[in-house]
Image 1 (cartoon, rainbow, N blue to C red):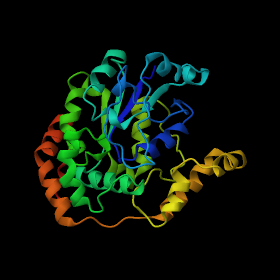
Image 2: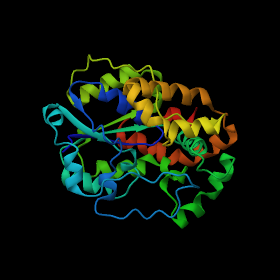
Image 3: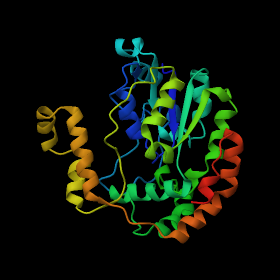
Length: 302
């Protein structure tokens, strides 16, 4: 079983962090699946009413303990100093903190948080990229959120609600020692990835002088310039098995990331929309600073 988890949040660089941590010789992360979502859905049906128009993806989730434990049963896992997994929905899910504490009461937990209004917009662009968001403006998608939540849409569409980090982290601080939880910001990671990774390595008790290749970023969001190319990159097709046999995985990832970034454009959100969202998060951001003993007030002035 893992001895550390990265619990969130979505659109905060966790896919890139997964790739970077995999490079460390003393860290084990499952290669079969990045997000197990086990502690969100153990022995539970996934009952979201809407994932987006076809072709859409449903949530990957391992729901039984035996299958979950098997991910960490290899010799490679057993000899690693830090054994973990990354499921960014754990932060938002209301049952995950309890389940994690039940199975892993001594686990080290890492949360990567992003300016909540910017996270919401990036989340929106992510679904636009994947063809899953029917509203062509961020403002209309935000206006639709209360009805979507009432109708049981997938959490991906809870742009505003997923940004109340203090409310979410309170569940973890209520169960785990303060020293077992580390909170980093996406902003620090994006500007100085090596420094943040060094702190993560130190927290996990592994060699913090190791420097992974951070020259690539995964899972970026935006409006596709060419939707056919986007579908080719992100969805199964007959060419991919052929490419898999010819190109090593490391280079496949780099090529896909490069093509995706070149194909995506990121329009700037309306400043008034971001300002209004940020103001709505004000009380939660102030509570977050008190809860974590870290200063997040810069988010209120960006």
